[in-house]
Length: 267
Picture 1 (cartoon, helix red, strand yellow):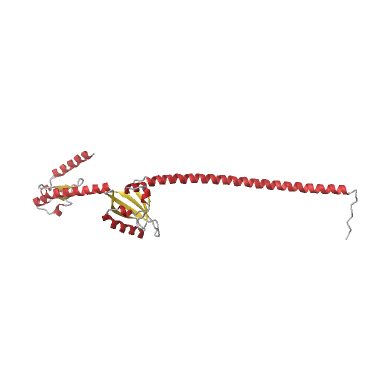
Picture 2 (cartoon, helix red, strand yellow; picture 1 turned 180 degrees about the vertical axis):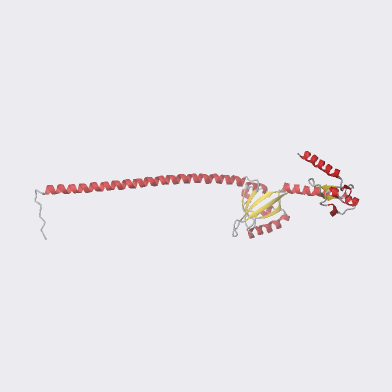
């Protein structure tokens, strides 16, 4: 193995100069690499910051949309013309809108955890209990009509309720005030009874005709006895097919004139 030569004192400054040149070159290369790495990291950070700002803007926009929808839902829920209730299996009121609270004559906060059944008229309690059991036992929407007793006054309501899932412990109910509708129906029934009484007991012959075809829809007992036909022989026949009216063309003309007159009155 050859022996390494020992530099002379005169050669040491030159060797040191070469070593410093090599170290300086290496330092420059390292610095250049560090600057490139730093620039890359900076660019990555800037891109990440832009992405975060975009995500933040999207979150802000989405949150604003959700808040707007929530306000709209709340307004629709609270100010709907019908009562909305969330009821438990025993009829406990877990939630109610303003219309529902007004219908029951109570502040909304006071309704929570009270039973809906305590606002029912006595004769409606059993109907409502059976209805509620069916609601929780069936996935289909159920409907019933009951009477509420609010401050001593009866209020007729129609309830539609359903459960979102078979295992739920609550149901959503819509309660509509149908008091006026029921009163109108009762008036119509009473009017029909009075009409039938007059129709049946009139001492004049009365025929009810279809306005378009001239077919006989009904006839009162007096005319039946007068002409000697049975009730069924009159029905669904055109007036000119019966007895003394038969084959009289003038009756058809008069009927057409009567239709035109009635249409003018109703126009």
